Length: 126
Image (cartoon, rainbow, N blue to C red; front, side, top):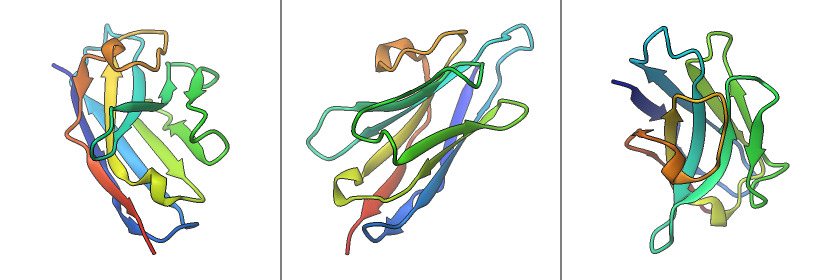
């Protein structure tokens, strides 16, 4: 069973940076491809897909709301994914979730992912 754990949330001021981490474990060695996505949900709003990565480094997708400010990267073993968030804005305040799917593709939609973490909270406030 795939397990997903996020970390790195916190309170920052507008314009500052934060890096979230997501570690995925429990998938079998036969699961060669692992797509990992980041989502966020602000109070009273729907969950929003913000970034997604398939197994290959070239397969990264960003939502327009974070394009140019957020960067998704994967470690060499590809079981840990980082979301570098720069120039944070108050609108970025939300609970951030990491999700995984055994797939060689990446679709930035929550229905695509079957394994989810519990989330880490990010607050951007002066």
